[in-house]
Amino acid sequence: MALPFLFTALCLILMLSQSLPSSSLLQETNFLDQNPTAYEILGDYNLPKGLLPKGVVGYSLDTTTGTFSAFWNGTCSFSLEGSYQLRYKSTINGYISNGRLSRLEGVSVKLFFFWVDIIEVTRNGDDLEFSVGIAGADFSVDNFEECPQCGCGLNCGEYLREAIVRMEKPVMAFDLLKKNLRSPLFCSLPMAFLFEYI
Image 1 (cartoon, rainbow, N blue to C red):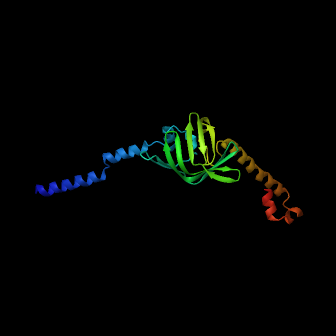
Image 2: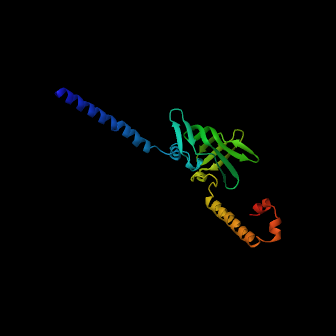
Image 3: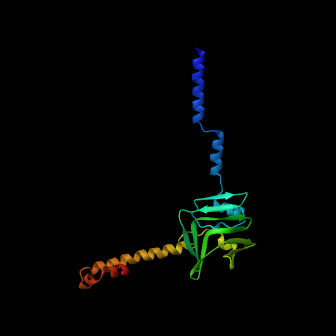
């Protein structure tokens, strides 16, 4: 009679222990919550966080080989200082070491009329050297303290002001059209002209 009761109790304990999370699983979850961001990884390798635009949704790093990848929800393009246009693919890859990102894939800069891949970024003291293979350019590390934002780079306040001005223009154009809605001139204009005007 004690044997069936003992068997039932053991089965119940076994079922309950399977439904509770293990301590190693809890440690893994806590470990995942404490992972550094991609921007912090750059800092760990003596590189400024502003090398990556805002919006990184994930990254991978193999510390033994230095293989590094960063991921966004889509491509990211922006201009810096009104002169350099940069484009990041949704995934960039390369190798990271102290003060250096090499064999980069997925980052390009527009030079004149052509898009050229940036293949390496090296820190030399307070300067960063960007290499496109046959040529390179040096910039102060201070220029990369802030992360650029997709679409507007570092001038997002100016970008927002321009967007507001563009939004006000259609309202003024609509008011003008509303006043002249019944004019013969308005009725004879092709619709393409009207939308171009707005």
